[in-house]
Amino acid sequence: MLTVNVAKSGEVTEILLTGELDGMTSPQLEQQLNSLIEAGERCFLIRFAALALITSAGLRVFLGFAKKMHKLNGKMILCEMSANVRGVFDTAGFSNIMTISATAAEGKALLEPEPAPPA
Image (cartoon, rainbow, N blue to C red):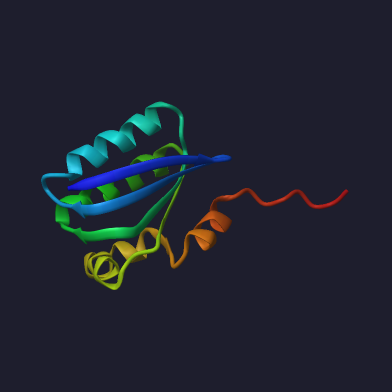
């Protein structure tokens, strides 16, 4: 079972994944991500703190999402991965092509626009 909680914080759409992301649940996540893109969202912080398991089907969702974000000049930061989930991303080589931060605060800092320098 997978629960996807979406919250908006300024320009950042924060997504908290809870449960397991596998062949049964990945279509649900893919559909929700596509709906957010269609609604015009372009800046995502995806939190894995409560995700217990990810399989290759779940990885495919993130690969497809990353490609869409690249085409749309969007941003996606993945954060708060357990050692097991991070290991799956590392083994698949996704850690080299996606930005992964240790904490949500670090991820938000990477997503937020740079403040304008004082005049």
